[in-house]
Length: 414
Image (cartoon, rainbow, N blue to C red; front, side, top):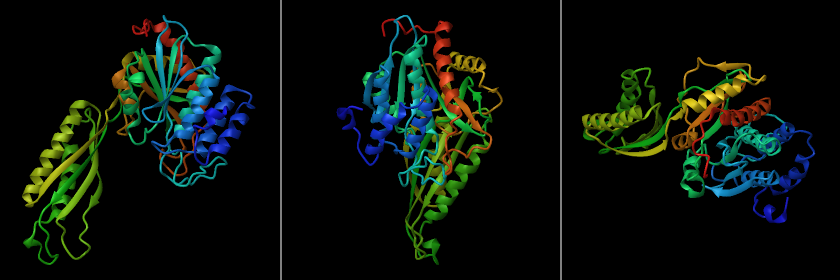
């Protein structure tokens, strides 16, 4: 690694990264190198917005493989481009690169060396898969022009949106965009790539309930914000879900309840925080109207007032029908894929890949991590390295199949 490139990388991981770069190329195959990358990333996790060292390694490897590299896109985002011919489709492939603020409890040999940070969602594996595909594509040249997107800050829900805000990236004409996520509970080698809805939107809200304080022995002398907040929380949890159709999935959840009376007073202020998750824009709009309307009605009954602060997060992730069909076709052609899953329901979890899916025809698919795998965001989670060759093969197959589909009107003139 050149000294000029090394200078871009800071923190405690600097020395191990320098030695690691030399060790990496002692491996004997693309897949074994990708697995080595994965384990190094797992041991050196970086939280959302702090992925400097991770981004530095990614950019260094992409340059070694002949990619045109763009750095600092929407934060620590890295984009690697590999063009073959103007008449080929231009496809994007995305991996998320950030870790979670969790202390690791696993005892694997590559466990996190950073207190309070770990790759508990498998982003280390997603990054390794995309890097493995990047190296393989530099050798085998698939029938597509490639835009490989290494996205920061997925866990905070801001990374994809921030990358798209950068004109050098967001104005690209892509014929398709693809990404994957490992999924515990699904058998290893199984793939779920449905048409339409796959994951929900995720928006956050804060409701501030205000009134007049009172002595706990004399609640009638004030307006009880605690009782008001409890009533609002109960109503939002219960009645919204009961009135919705199962085909229009949506859920409102209260995640924080703050009221500091200290056992000596019924306070004058309480705060509810929560999320609303929906599968389509209509349900999303209805959820917000419901929150605003019903919280104000209940607050008035208790003689209190409520104000709402809404932070819009990522939209629902919807797969383009043609792109999803290509992902399923790719899976059906691979010997390592044991099952093309069709009977799962979309999850109320969210992923900011949804912003890319809003911009370009896209497909996001789940890759089974094993029936007995620890759950995502669990402190004992570790990515299943058996998924690395499967993920690499899926991306390579998609890149080749897309060109044969003829669905690439944006290719010429990009």
